[in-house]
Image 1 (cartoon, rainbow, N blue to C red):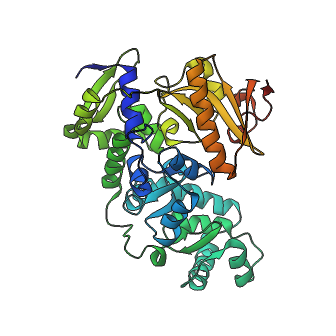
Image 2 (image 1 turned 120 degrees about the horizontal axis):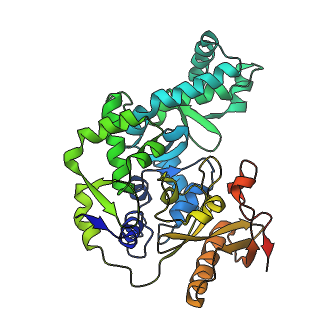
Image 3 (image 1 turned 120 degrees about the vertical axis):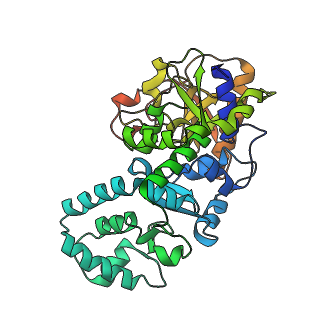
Length: 383
């Protein structure tokens, strides 16, 4: 297989990412595994990313897997970002990114005034009071009777694998929360190699630069991992795109033989959705002229409208209103599908029917202040 069309790659990745009608499933743990985790910087994103990939999702389903069944957990890992991962993924992602993540959180703790000695003292006390219970940062601070902000220590303890982010704003002992997870069962390079395999299973075909960007690791580390699995990968060209693309050999037959969808595939994806955040090079799914409407200066993606895997617009929600901003005029049947999906996601967010309005303009995210991706159509012109 020498060259693949962009359309075929998009069909393949939509299928792999559970974003087509025939690939949606209701096993959310399987989805989290298949898409290499859920971006959880915004607490709303995991729920909306799962809603886009399931047939009948309710918000409590994710809460149940996180806090009751504990098949999923939240840790800081790739690019020093909070992700929802399966129990099986946690040791891989943790070990592969530990040095990078822990270094950043240690620097933050020192910036907040905690020396190594102070950290050791307070962290031991925190572990003692968290035996068999979970607490918020405020509750921990009050129990320990200290004036300092303990959040920096809690972040560092999480990143060291001592604590777990449990229910919203609460912390638990990692060992008690996940007694069967061994965070030291593999070395760093073994974990990085498994992380790269996981990435390629979810996002391949992709470039080396894509993998480096997504993981936040060095090019040297990624090349070493790719070299160790070269028998399990193939290199392909994508028509009209520059670069050498890598994918798993086990996916070759699927991408060759995948059937095009019978109907147009329309998706409304939330901010920081994995489908958009998996790549440094985005020309496969986004025209360059619209780049600054989708990504801010840090490379964070806003909420998007997809047509057959390509971004054709932006959507936003506030106060029981879904705003839509299509980049170009589209056919009436596509408009109807977009409105249908807008009503679906609006009802999911608001638990009631919502209004839909179209915008005539938007301010590019590169001209907005940090956090603009959270409300991309805040100041849009309305029809």
